[in-house]
Length: 112
Image (cartoon, rainbow, N blue to C red; front, side, top):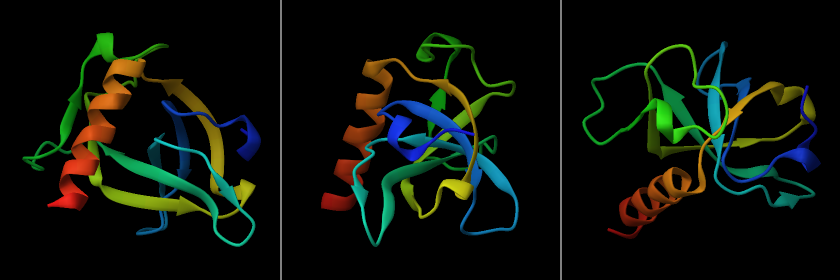
């Protein structure tokens, strides 16, 4: 398990999905901790390709080992992890440039 205080921008963790009962990979875009709100700015990662605005992750987008399946970041799909139990384990991380791409698309999405 990864402790909240160890999370950093660009990390990908396996975590509880607030929209379903199963877990999924999630990308940490920011890890500020708030006493009553958990860790903020987590975006969902999917293996589904039907999301036209998703960002496909290529092997060279990873700072560590790539995820096992071709994956896509859904920058409009934000989640909050509220307890350490929400995170099962660390998977890998993205390079800074790709993390910035995701952040920029999220910013464009929420500011339009």
